[in-house]
Image 1 (cartoon, helix red, strand yellow):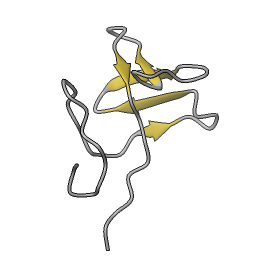
Image 2 (image 1 turned 120 degrees about the vertical axis):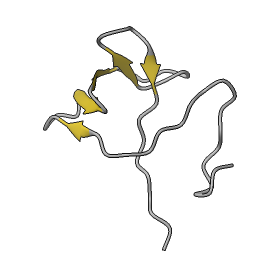
Image 3 (image 1 turned 90 degrees about the horizontal axis):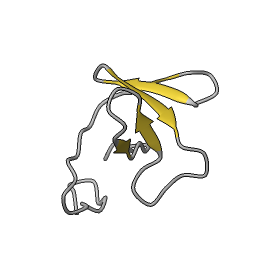
Image 4 (image 1 turned 180 degrees about the vertical axis):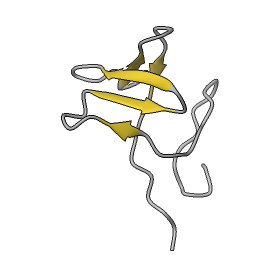
Length: 65
C-alpha cells in the first residue's frame, strides 16, 4: 500500500501529479504525455498513450489531512 492507502500493482510505476483534462474527460495530458480515454475502461488502464500505445491508470488522488 502507498502512504495514501492505495494499492501498489506489481510491475507498474506510480507517478503523482496533476493532469490536464478536456471538458469531456476524453483526453488528458500528464507530464507531456497525451492520453485518450479507453471507452468502458480496462483491467490494465483507463487511458491510452497516443504516442506509444501504452495503457495508463488515471485516478483521483485525495490529499491526507
